[in-house]
Image 1 (cartoon, rainbow, N blue to C red):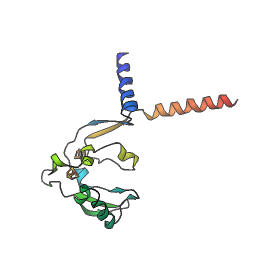
Image 2: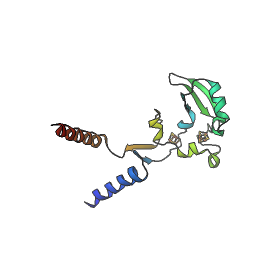
Image 3: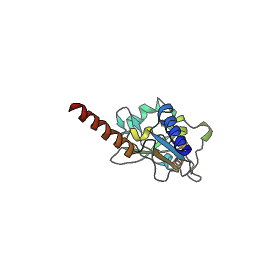
Image 4: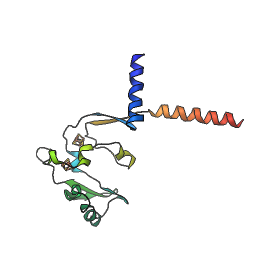
Length: 148
Ligand code: SF4
Ligand code: SF4
């Protein structure tokens, strides 16, 4: 019973106080993947041409670190010049931008992004899909009854 109470308290804290949809667990294993394959999202979607990056460079120093290394159906692919290719560590770790400090965050899923396969962090929904489904079924059942 105490275990359930703790579980529910944790769920309440993450969903209602922190307003998160996922629990983030694990830790960085310093694989460097997130600094090696980067898509850049602007207000108009994932950027597909270099001119757009030039504009973004004026807005934040993070974009000035990026070099184009390729392109695919999603958009341009960048790598960060601040990554040390020998050690996989960030050369400006103590002064890295906030966006790097916060990575990975659940917002990237909302924006259509995905986590690197090698990443040591894991995301698990705070409210499991089955629970959401059960609630939706109950709710639609109630509505049907009200109509009768
Ligand atoms: S600044 Fe550092 S942490 Fe951020 S993407 Fe570049 S190498 Fe990675
Ligand atoms: S992909 Fe994940 S584990 Fe790898 S460096 Fe980035 S945050 Fe760390």
